[in-house]
Amino acid sequence: MDKRHVIAEIKRLASMSGGRPPGRERFEKETGIRQGEWYPHLWLRWGDALQEAGFAPNELARKFDRSVVLQKYVSLIRELGHVPLHAELRVKARSDPSFPSHSVFSGIGSKTALLTAVREYCKENQFADVLSLLPSEQEAGPQPYIKEKEKKALTGYVYLMKSGRHFKIGRTNSIGRREWELGIKIPIPPSTLHAIETDDPIGVEAYWHRRFADKRGEGEWFNLLPVDIAAFKKWRKIA
Image (cartoon, rainbow, N blue to C red):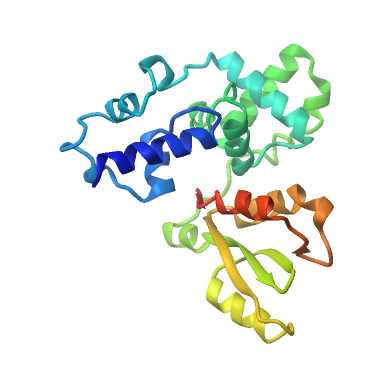
């Protein structure tokens, strides 16, 4: 592995996150470069790689007080008008350097634990508007146990396909099969431009449909610009 390539990728991901350098796990997911390809012959610690890429030690990680984390989460709920999806937390962190990464929220616990903490925070601060947007305590309760094989079956793809001048954003468990299905239904066979692998295909698809709502035609078809396509292609895997 070329050290210069790793450093270039670190800088690229940091530029996509408002200057915040990527953690080791995010770097591996986004680039496919595994720890064994740079450790120990290039660097002994991930922090050393970040430093060599130009990020000072005090920029490598941000520590947030619990109340600040909850306040940020509440602010995003107000901004969106609903409890944020996992993908929306990632998008916010990328666009706002002051916003905690999704892993900071995971540090509070499960989604149920996080919503419980948010609910208590809103009650203490009398944020009735946000409380009205939260699911009930019964709805936010523990979810039934899902076997590992069932979990894997939930993984899917959100795709961007082109047919003529138009673009389709949808979800599927098999890109090749979906392209074939559409190919026999429409005059111009579609071609897949990009696919995002995710364990939340419904949520990720809904995000992109909302983002391009003003460019929507019929159904899942959109009139997109090159900048829109480039934005979609930046997302590789959302887990």
